[in-house]
Length: 459
Length: 150
Image 1: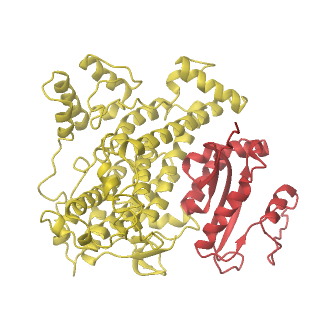
Image 2: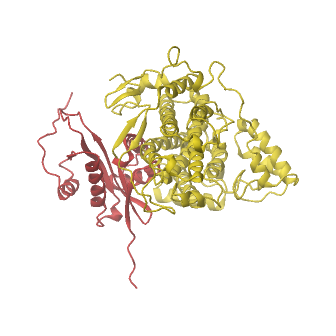
Image 3: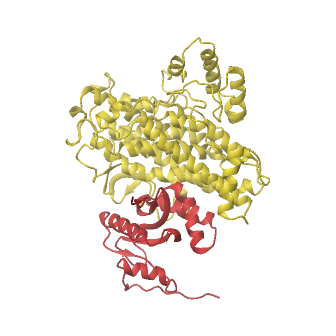
C-alpha cells in the first residue's frame, strides 16, 4: 500500500479541535503515553490518508470496466446523492463511537485496556477526519439538497449519542464491558463495510478504505483480547466480569450490528452503482459467521482456563455437548457459555423487525412475557434507558396492532436531533474563531513525512 | 471420480486467528500459550495486518507467518521486511503452505518498498533453517551475538 496523506482546510480542523475539547477530553493523554503503550509504532497522524495503488477501473456494477469517478460531478444525480448519504453516515459513526467510548473509558480495569481504547478513539477521529476530507475536498452542494459544505460538517459535529444516523451509535455504554464488546462486535461491521467499499466507483472514497481498514483491524483486537482475558479470569473464579455480563452485552450489541448492514432484502443499489461488492444479506451472513467463530474461540479460552489438564480435543467435545444439551457438565453451566443471540432477537429494522423472539430463537406470543425476557437477557443498566423505554412502548403498540412493524421501524429511534448546537460555547464550523481563539488539536506537531500534518509527537 | 484437494488461501492476519495460531503453536511446541499469542497477534495487527499472513485449508487456519516492515535497528537504516514467527500445522505439512505464506509476504514487502528480507534463525532448529534456505535466505553480514549475564 502506497499512502498519500493530506489535510482538510483549517476552519474544519479547528472545528474538529473544538469538538475534541468537548467530546474527547482524554486525547492528550494518549499522546503523552503513546511510547509506553505503542513502542515502535509510528506517531498518530490526524490527517486524511489515500491509497495511491487503488484501481482506476470500476470493479463492479453497471459501469464495470469503465474508469472510476474522481469528482461527484461525474456521477449521476441519484448516485451522487446515494454516495453522499453513505459518507455522512460513515462520518456520524466515527464521531459517534468516540462519544460512546468517552463516557465509560475511565472505568477500564487496566491501563492497557484504557490506552488500547484511547487509540481506537483517536483512530476513529482520524476516520471522521477522512470523511470530512471526502466532504470538503470536492463540491457536493449540488447533491445535498441545498445544504452547504460547512453545514454538512457541522451537522455531523453537532450529533450526540441519541441523534446519530445509525442506532448502534445511539446507545450509551453501561460499563467498560460495552467499550470492549462494542469494539469486538460493532467495529467488526465497520470492517465489513470498509472492505465492501474498497471497490467504490468513486475513487477518492475507495482510496480511503485501505488505510482505514489497517487501523480497524486493531480495533477488533481491542475488543477480543480483553474478552479473552476476562473469560480466563472468570474461569479461574474471578467474579467481577462474568460470562453472563459479557453475554448480556453481546445480546445488546449483536442485533444492532446486524441492522448496520441494512435491510436483508436490500443492497442492490450499492451493487448496481458500483459502491459496494456485496448485497446486504450476503455481507450480514459473513459477519454472522465470523462473530459465531469468535464466540466459539472465546468459549474454548474459558473452558481451557477452567480445565487446564484437559486436552484441546476433550474441551472441544465438552463445548459441543454443553451447547447441544443446554445442560451443565463437570461444574460448568450452560449459562457460562457464550451464545449467538438468534438472528431475529431484539431486532428493530430489517426483515425480522419487531418480531417477538427469544434470545435462543423461540417465538414469544405475549408481549409482556417478551418484555420480561428482555429484562432477563439484556444488561441491567441498559434496561433503565430512554432507548429501552421507547422500544418497550413500540413493541407494545406493534403487539396491539396499533402500528405495523414497518411503521415502528420508521419511528425508531424517536430521539430527535437538537435544533441548536450541542455545544453551549460553540456553534460549530462557522462560529469557530479561525484567527484568534480557536482550540488547537492537542500536542500538534509536524510529522516528518507529512508537511503540516498534525501528530502527537514532536518531530 | 477424482476428489479435488481443498484450496489453500492466504490472507492478512485477523483478530479471529488468535486461537488457531495458539493451537498450531501448541502442536509444534507442546505448550499452550494463549496470553503470549494474544499479545503478539495484537502487536502484529497493530503494526500492519497485511505484514502478517495466515493460510487456510478448507476454511481452517493451518499456517501463519508474522512479520513487520521496519528500519533503524542494528544500524540498518533502510526499511526491511522482517519475518519473525511462522508455523504450519503438522497435519497440513507437505502441501507447500510455508512457501505460499512466504511468497505472499515477500511480495507484499517488495510492493511496499522493501529491498531486503531479514530474519534470525536458531541453528538448532534445522527444519526451520532448511525451510528458510529453500525459500532463498542466505547468510547475512549481520551476525547475532549474545553474552550471558550473571
